[in-house]
Image (cartoon, rainbow, N blue to C red):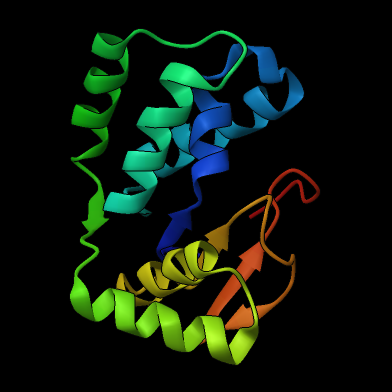
Length: 144
C-alpha cells in the first residue's frame, strides 16, 4: 500500500517521544520518520489532545509543556482530522456496531474520515478492518 495514508493512534505518537519506552520508542521513532518523509501520516484533534496530556503528565519522563506544544505545532503540518459533531455521531455508530469503546470508535472514525487505509495502534484489535481501515499493531509487525 505505498502512498496510502496512515493514521496514528495516540500510543504510537507517545512512544515516539517517550525515551523510557525503549524498544517501542525506537520503533515509533522509525515510523514517525517514515511518515514525515513520505507525507502519509494523519492524526486527529483527539490524538493531539491525548498526546499533550499523556506526554506532559503520564509518562515516566514527562516533557515540559513548551516542548510538547512545539511538537504539536510541528505535527499540525500533517493532515489533521477535526473532530466535530458529525464525528461524534459516527463514532457512536461504530461503537454500537463493532462493540468497541467510544474513544476507540472516535479514532476509527477519524481514520476513515481522513481517508486512511491503515491505522497503527497498540490498543485496537490487530488485523481487524473497520469501515475500510485496517488496524495494525506496529510493535508486533516489523513492516507497515
